[in-house]
Length: 250
Image (cartoon, rainbow, N blue to C red):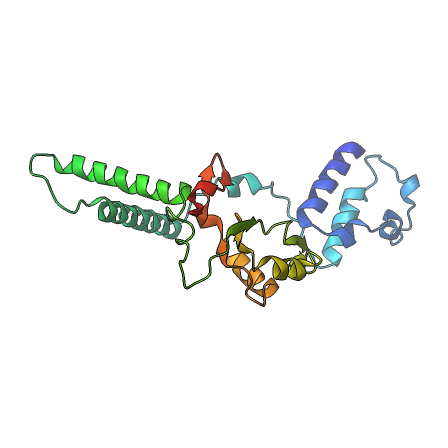
């Protein structure tokens, strides 16, 4: 009997989520009746049971004891409101129409060929657009990464020096407190000043330009670096950015 009463009591305590009340000692509950919880009788003549005493304690605290079954499962299976259904329908229809408009707008051919079905022309043009985007991502942005060497009377250094930025010119470091920081290599300024007359210094890195350009400008305050090549000048092969030195035009 006490196991059954304990199970019912535990369910009600969890349902009402009352940690302060659930921690009430039974000795305090039974002190009003003058009984010792360790000496409580379970006979049929005993009208004060542990369950009734705890329920009375809840009611004294201002909480209502509900004998109904748990309806959490019924709430999960409750029907979706009509307003939410209409909202989802409107959002889905809008997304489908916008996607169809974008696809038709991009795939529209410049000139229509009367001998080819129009749907086939749209598909062919869509494939060309996809190939163009793929090529734009995988190939460098231009065939010649560096301009042609200058001629007399301008001075063209006889050699070209290619430097990587990451872990060569500076070391990137990130922490939760400071975010991204770049540690400058010692004697970097001294090296650049001694090489600038003999070498055309070019920084070639796979880092994005929006991130790396301000950092290079901060390190090279004397403008000793001739050119800066970033991620858009690399090949994207198997998930890696590869530098092709054959396209340097040197």
